[in-house]
Picture 1: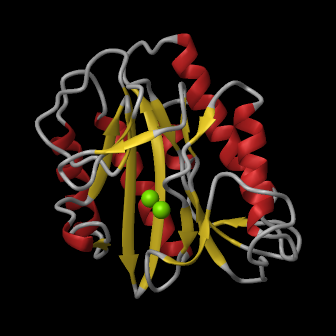
Picture 2: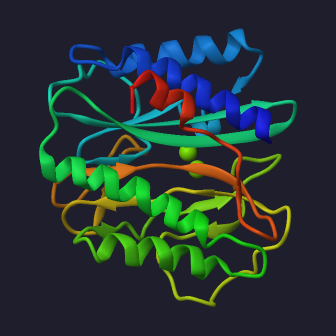
Length: 245
Ligand code: MG
Ligand code: MG
């Protein structure tokens, strides 16, 4: 699980090297797919229920599941890049939202808050706690800062398959939901909106966007539940080294 997830991190770092104004989302996808195949991984999203690409790329008001294409990144865009890899039979899944050029301060705050809420959720993901504790931590963190939590999509269990039980919502009640057990692996992935929580599903069958057209951010880690705190299997370290963060 760790090796597959580290490959997701290094793939996203390859994407980080080339994300800039003027690049198309298709070019980012091609770089990721080539990198994964060169390293003997399997791009997990490609062909999943017919999804056409290795990456989900979702710009600005697109929340998740965007299909790479001819769109050229513009100054001020934010870009969620979600990547999945299968390696030696195990799955890795992680996502990072990148800034392109100069991003508005309120949007920067959305990104920062969403990433911090992921770590707030991870801090609650300890053996003996419940899925609701994770969701509640994320929800409270984001709502107290004025942002809203998408309800229609969730994180998930992960292992030999990308999507396993249980669902991992980014909202919930403390002490509610499935029990977290030692060794369970889950993908936690807050999808947080600057405006209202409502989303729309586009006619392409994949892209999810905000109903009010305002920006949305998305970060994701795959973690393993442990008695004293989560073991984060994916990593943003390589990405943030490239970004000098
Ligand atoms: Mg993902
Ligand atoms: Mg996921």
